[in-house]
Figure 1: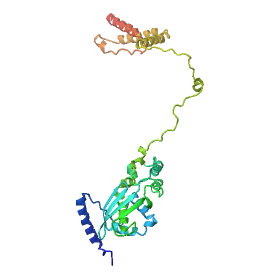
Figure 2 (figure 1 turned 30 degrees about the vertical axis):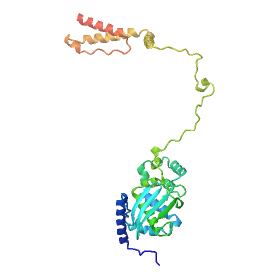
Figure 3 (figure 1 turned 180 degrees about the horizontal axis):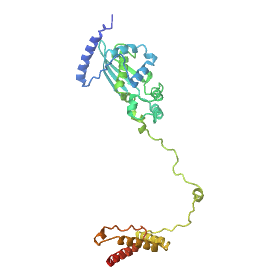
Length: 318
């Protein structure tokens, strides 16, 4: 007695599977996400290629993967969904088979190791998702021992087909479909492993916490350390606004008094300039257009007053 159904042609399987998926989508209210391969290559980007290389590196998958490639290429993967720790798919065979793949989350210790080694080497999310980084970083994130891709022991397969093998051709087709999906949505790999890709970006890397003990104090003689002289007693001074004004005025007067001939010399200079300016005026009407001579900034206010008085007297005499 033959328990296996007669195999249907590929186009018949697809038509039958597509009809069943539409009916299932109406009942369960979900949007089918089929895998469509364009051309001969299943994957064309860094993340998609790396996923497929990781699959093919496991020897215990070798006898099932070729059939899975055939199925995914001919459009038999009618639906594929990637969530945190779970991949689900619908594959068209003689019947429509449901595939589920459980994948362990990336251990936190492994993720911390990856973050530490990637620190400052990935500048933006675009660089990360397009795989535009150094060979060293590529080797790091794809490392079999602690990288982002799951090993064979981290995956558990389940399919509703009658094949007794843990990885059947339908499971293999879904796994290759994941590689193709990562070509278009590479961020799903990080979602699958339960990590945040933004933590690998240089601008978001946290600075290391200082381990220096708080409360350190200088020991020894401060005068010797800094080369200064400290007073024994410092009296508190009540500095008010009036004190500051008085002190400022007295300081200015003291500065001027320290140059005893300054006022006299300034008066003579300004007087000579004013006389020359007034003598050059022909009429009374043009007097207002003459610019005042530039006075030095430090001349006391009373010098300005004397000059103005003498200029007016000169004009009246003329």
